Length: 453
Ligand code: GLN
Image (tube, rainbow, N blue to C red; front, side, top):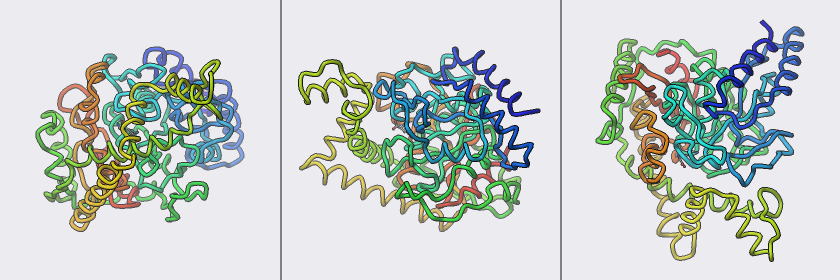
């Protein structure tokens, strides 16, 4: 069948189910069909990209030329990007079809997608549950088969946690593996784009398009990009899997622990070996992140002042009034909370006590992983301490919400690649197994994930 037929099928699903799920904030029906026609022509002409003609969606944090890029915020509700993000242009070149832009927590701050200006996304497995966040729109869209795959971003778990809550596969690449050009900045030393898909096989095809050096991102890595699909199916005999004792502590749901154990046993039956390891600074991940990420966001978000772009209040009295009201009206509560925490942590007299201290702890966390990778090839544990929780359940308690990222955040602080893959759930809702690899070992993670699917 043709890409036009495939695209029509997906667009039909979007129009039937999106009003319930709220996973897309923009649907580009006409443009998608044009892209599909073009892809069909290219395919007839011998174009061989794996993704040619495949309908995908982009998280609304990636700039798309001529199409609204809101980042889930009132601040950018009317912003039409004048250029494509690197990732978006890579997919265009590969001939993929963009169905639309997916909902997300405002400026990617959140773990439940309840912080979006466009309202919460619903979990396709249970209407009253959250899809996770901040890439909840992409996760729900892939899980509900409203697109084949989607892009996401992960600053502190935002690809892996929603992948786990929605029962799909998500990969957060090594920091620097995927260009951040045109990806609206939250916390620049942590932000990384990556694929969200049904399987590791699909994620490998997506990453192939996304990865690679880009001179427009100063932290883009020059490391060569391997063929991610070529090593899928490699033998796992002798693979040493590190199981960190800190990831199986008090707060972990018993059903999740049982599901993870079943998955680990399967790896043992494939010839892998389990090694008990320790990541002793795990408990410092969340507090460290909540200094570093707000500090960087307070700086990044200072550009939204109502002057050049973004929301502008009506009839400002003077410049200060313009700044205050534009920012006051444009940002939601969680974003304001982060800006205030970050500004405080960076202010004279507090910088050493908070930001500098957090940077030092960040090194200790990286050292924990370095020591672990001297002993093992890959680390495994749960992605999140619970399955998808109810909409509204944690909305008034930011600290409990922040704790849903306890197992994912350290990976960002260290800049490592991490994945979440669905495993056989014990209990009703989807459960994610987290795989953590050494720097630039995405191919290994994808293969290990693929062998379980
Ligand atoms: N949930 C975390 C936060 O709210 C992580 C978000 C993300 O990875 N973008 O900051």
